[in-house]
Image (spheres, rainbow, N blue to C red):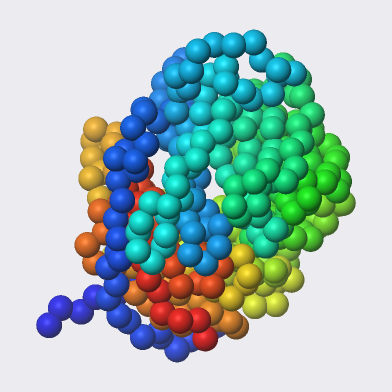
Length: 392
C-alpha cells in the first residue's frame, strides 16, 4: 500500500502529535464563467500596462452559509454624465457578485454595482455586514445587500505609482489598513473601523515588504535592500505607533495573522533550485514557535485561511506542476492537502488529503464556523467548496 506524507506541525525543539489523516473531495464545483457571462478584467502588470495579470476577484463568506465571490467586468451601459464623480450607470466597470449557498452549491443571487475603477471587490466581512471597495469608494452593506454607509477615501497624488488605495484586512474582518504609493518612501496609511467605516488613525510610513494586520497590531516584513544584508526580522506596531522587532531569530517572509497573537509565515532557503520554503507559526511575542515540516517531496504549505471568529484556520498544501525551467515557465500550484487547526493551534486537529480538485493556484475563504472552505482557482475561475470536520 502506498504511503502518502503530508506536512506535520513540530514544536521547534520537539515533535508534536501527528494529526489523523482522512480524504476529502469537493462537495460542489462551479465554473464562474457559466454564471458571469462577460469577460473578466485583469489587473494590469508589467510594461506596457496593457499586459494582463491575475483577474480582479475576491472571495468571502458573508455568514456560515452564504459565500460571495466577485469579479470585475467592463460595463456595457450607455455613457452618461457622472454625478459628483461617484460610480453610476456611466461608470466604465462593473463589480459582479455571485452569492452561493455553501451546503448545496445553489446560486442565490448575482448582484452588481457600477465602479469607476477596475480595482473593486469585497474587502471585509464581519458581524455587522460586509464592505466593498470600488476605487476610492467604500460601502458598508448589510447581509441583505442594503447599503448602510458610504465614504470616499482621500484622493491620491497623481505621481503615486500604484494609483489606488491597497486594502489589508484584519484576520477578524473588523479593521482595514490602507496605504498607497511606492515602496521605500513615506506614503499615507489609514486605519479604518470596518464595522462603521470610521477612520481611526492616519499617518505617514514606509512600506518595505508584506504587511498583515490584527485588530490592534500591524506586522511588516522588512526586505533587505542590498545583497548580503542580514536576514529580515518581522516588526510590529500599534497602528500609527513606532515599529518594534518581534523577538524572532528566523528570517521570515509573507507573514499572515491567523489569530489575535499568532502569525503564519515562510522562510525561504537560498542555494536550492527552486528555493526551498519552510513554514512556521509564531506567537507575536516570540514565546512559542512551531514548524510545519514537509516530509513529502514537492508538497509545500501555502495560503492560510482564517475563521473570523477565531475558532479555526486552515493551511492549504500544494504541489507545483507544469514547470519548465529551461523555458522560464514557473508552473502552477495544485491543491493536495488541508491542514486544519483548532485551539490551542499548536498542531493540526486534522489533516485532509484532497482528492479530485481541479483548481490551480488557489485562493480560499473559510466560513465563520469553520465548517466550509471555498477555494477559487486561477486562471480558470473554478470554485470548489469543501465540507470540513466539526470544530473542537
